[in-house]
Length: 196
Image 1 (cartoon, rainbow, N blue to C red):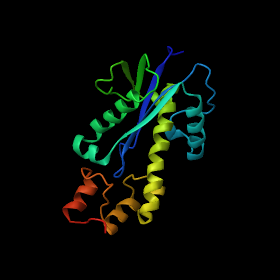
Image 2: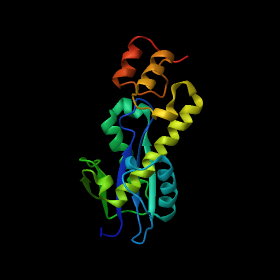
Image 3: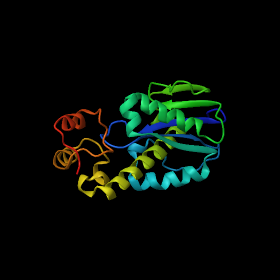
Image 4: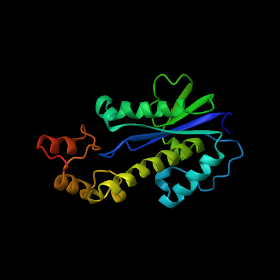
């Protein structure tokens, strides 16, 4: 049993070629009821969506934050991810006594004791909860982009560099929401391939 007021932190969207990177921080009560909760990557989209509602309803505190495409371009994806994580922790309505972060790095300047846990999203329930909230927020952004730009298929590949996404990029050009520092995008920009 983890000590009281431990926040789990995880991110979603480091790898895709488009959109913001998201992070979530979650503090769960000791009597949570979240059957089936594990690393969001191991859950179906339907199960993630169901769990996200339950996590928000049951959590002592939760916060989802992001870093924008502009921030990713300015800071690089690693530092933008750390920024999103720090924003999520700082946005909690209740201050945690300890923060457990998925992965091997802790964001700087959290102002609270923090520890990185490799594969934490499948070992620590608070991190699993954070992974679900970050992933569902990131997916919501992709669905919104899919409505604005249906020809890119964001609802299917979620912005990852799949063959379908790369083909759409090549055919229709780079959107303002694409991450300019990522190689496939940078290559097309060098060729002057902008959307519209």
